[in-house]
Image (cartoon, rainbow, N blue to C red; front, side, top):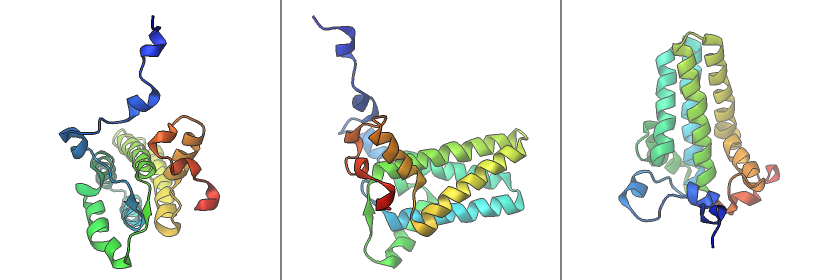
Length: 181
């Protein structure tokens, strides 16, 4: 006789998308990812966010949030910033430098949370809180764009080593440490 707990799917089964199928192709995220393209995209985010902060243009924060949502959901196939980075800017640097995709997708998710929360706060009139989140986003995206330190990827690695994210999601990531940056 099986117990209730034996019939529950594992954490990995909840996270993984079924292998075949049209839905998976639509919501696919590349693995591996060209680090140069990711860094250029982060640079575009830095530029747009700084323009938004300097000019006080809330709609730009909405545009940044929309870009993060598109990249999180569809990878670089639909986001204008990612398309520019992948197809035009990154090839200028030559051969791609490939890095694991799951941490980059996790980082995009953090970007969605920060930028969407900032946009909602700005629309609600909580300007200081909204712009503070955008400044935090600028800091994180600047680290990625200018020195190649992806904070979302580092957080992903820590969560994976602690067992919160299953090791099977990205075995290479489980070995990540600050020394390997």
